[in-house]
Each structure stands twice: as structure tokens, then as C-alpha cells.
Image 1 (tube, helix red, strand yellow):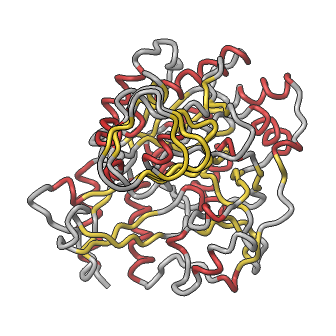
Image 2: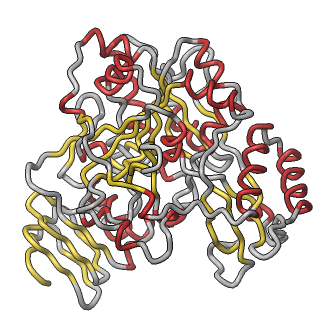
Length: 460
């Protein structure tokens, strides 16, 4: 046991201004870690999720939708810097459709819903200290976006990284900020409570929070889901989509056999040697889209019963203190997933939604797709597809991994993709204007420039 390590960590958190709930949550996870808890879910303890409500089967009226939306707050997780894509600022500050950033589109989607249904529909970003300033600067272009009495954002907590061998807070004088990490997006519940927003929202009559990743442009606040929740008094709902071979590494919901409770199993929760079961999309046929709906009254009651925290399973994330330096000190980051809260709400539900509600941008492959002519933004700033067939598979090579390099290779914009079935670029190619891809396209070999107006097909 490392009582000293825990004391040093919680003292550092208090000095940094962490709320009592954040410190209590870290204390709980630390003790779980010490006791050998890894948050693993054996395949033998779960059964596949079946018999799920579908969004297309939900019937609501215009009045139902308006009444429900009047009781919803939209919360976007916006703490990520996009470092895996070579960005130094918030990923959502990236221009994704013309001159519009992710945040512009989120703001316009929110304002369109407000106008259509004549509701307040507050928007909140869960920022980190590193994403806050630039994100709020972008949203300042929308003076009607703030709702009186509420901020536009709140700050997620931070916790110390722990040395893997002693569980003491790590020391890294070369960059002291690397001694800290976010506690995973499960922190959203604690941050809402610690900032007073949970109380403030409930005082305004807000019943449900819709939570999603800010880089998922498909995750709009759906009025039909809101009405379904309210009509059926559902405490918590998770959106799921049909799982394909490409989704095998993503988390899925399952039924815990000992009590028939819905639970989330992410890749970090898989028992070593059971990846085959986890990735079997014929057994676990639905994946977790990380679009969640939470009853704030139920959340407040749960936190009151649980000493001010949400008793989520722990995720043990092993890294190095400097993620860019594999030789730096090995550390443990104690994390939790917001979707794991499904197991602490009796009566929680899953709802199967169309794939269009899952449109994350985690790589430049996905960025090219959403920037292409396959999609348009409609009058309500929703991303809509212009094709009826399957989207092309895109695989961009190393020269395109980071956004600045990617943009330099598409100086006039990405190629036309509506007639493309796959695009693989292994060569270092720079694309001219008005290039079109048709069928299966593979570009390999020496560096080259694709001329303006070229139509590409086959292997080049």
C-alpha cells in the first residue's frame, strides 16, 4: 500500500484547485488500483446485447419534441488537443467544411434547433485549460449562443500521473505540465457537480443532458430521442450503431449475466487473450457511439447516495510521462469512461441509431471524407450524405498523418470522391485543383504532383 503516494497526489490536486468530488473520485480509483483492480470484464460474465429499441421505431409528435428539447442541455467533450493529428490546439478549431470549424458547425446546429423549436437548448463545452481560450474565441462569433445565467463551458479536472512502480506522483522538471493528465471523459459527471452546473441546470428545469464528443459532427441533439426519454422516464440511454469489421476495436455494450444490467466494455477492459471475443462483430453486433443521454435528477440522486461521486469502473492506462518519448518514466493514468455510467443506472437503455450519427474525425482519413463532396451541410448545419452507396475506404500514408502536412498536399482542396470506392495513397503526392477519384484508386511509388482536373482510377 502507498498511503504516502495517495496523500501526495490528493494534496497536489487540492493545491491545484480540484473539487472535493474530484479528489474523492481519484481516492477511490487509487485504492482500486492498489488492490489490483484493473477494470477487466471477462467474456464469461457477459451476454451479447439484443432486442434494442431503434430510433426509426420511435414515434413522437412535434409537441412532444418541443417539450422534450426544452428540458435538454447539450454537452460537448472538447478537452482534446488533437496531438495525434499533429495539432497543438483544440482539434475542434480545425476548419472542416470550407471556413467552418467543428465548433462553428456545433454552434450553428444548436442555434438552428433553438429557432425551429423555440427552446433555450443551452450548449456547454467541457474544455481543458489548453482548449478553453481558442474555443471560446471561435464561439464569440455567435453572440446569441450563450443562455442567460449559464456559461458556455466548464473545465475538466486534472490529476497526477503516477509512477508505475511506486504509485507516487511523477516528477518531470523538463515540463511540469506533463506531470498531469485528464481523468478520462468519465470526469464529466464530477466536473458538472464540482462546478455547480449540475445544480444550476436542474434549477432551470433541465432534465436531460446529451453528451457527445465534439469531433463527432453526426452527434446532433435529436428531438425524437429526447421525447422518447421523457415519455418513458428513462434514467440513462446510450446510442449504439451496427458493428462492422472496421469497428471491431471500438467499445460495445453487453448484458452482465449476474444481474442483467447493461454495461460498457471498452478495449482497455478486455481480459488479455480475449480480443477475439471482443472483436467478434457477429457476437457483439452493436458498438457504442459515445452519444449519451443522462437524467440529471437521477445523476444528482446517485451522487448524493455515493458520497458526491459516480462509482464508475476504473481504467488503468499505462503510458510514459512524455508520450512522445518512449524512454521517459513509465506512468499510470487512472481514467474512467463516461459511457461506463450505464451500469450504475438501473433501468438504463440502449437505442440503435443510424450510422450517420457516428461521424468522428480521429485521423486524416476521416478528415478527408468529411471535407469531400460526399457531404454537404444542410440549412440546419447538419452533415448530410450526397451518395446512396457505401462510403469509400480511405487510407492515407505517412506523409498525410499530420494535419499541416495533409493540408500542404491538398492546397486546392480534397479530390472529388462521390464515384470513388477506395483511395489508397502510399506515395507522397500533392493534389491539384478539381481532381476526381473514380472506383478503386491506388497511388504508390515516387513523389508526384497530380495535375489540375485529373481523373484518377486504378493503380497509378
